[in-house]
Amino acid sequence: MKSNVLWAIDTNILVYATAPDTPASKQKIAHDLLQQLFTSPLGCLPGQVLSEYLAVVLRKKTMPLALAMETVGTWAQAAKVLPVSEAAYQQAWALATSHQYQVWDALIVAVCAEHGVKTLYSEDAGAMKKPLGVQVFNPFAPA
Image 1 (tube, rainbow, N blue to C red):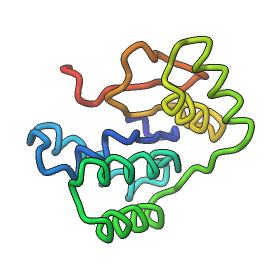
Image 2 (tube, helix red, strand yellow):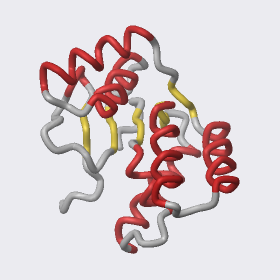
Image 3 (cartoon, helix red, strand yellow):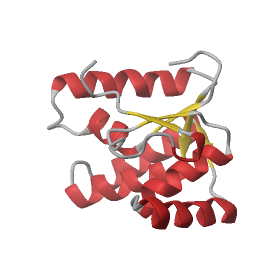
């Protein structure tokens, strides 16, 4: 992680940090990133990520509703949450249609770009190399 640039984490990092069936190696990486998110002034959390996390844990029933709400609320207070703007939606839709990215992934990238985030940690890096100037990095990929 570069020491002087903004960075963010994607939904899968939060899910792997809390899901009981996550392999230990992935869970450690996710926990480490989550810890850094809450202690680094450069770590960011797109608001969309919190919404996606809540949807995932409730759909998969990996935690009770009250605990899921408390977790999301705590993270929202502990992290620098990036809001979404109308311009970010416009960029996301354009990115999704021009590069065939999933709309919600494109929205997270657009929000990051709008706020000056240069690195997004996500298992979904795949074909997303550096959209809108945001480097998408898979922290779980073999070195």
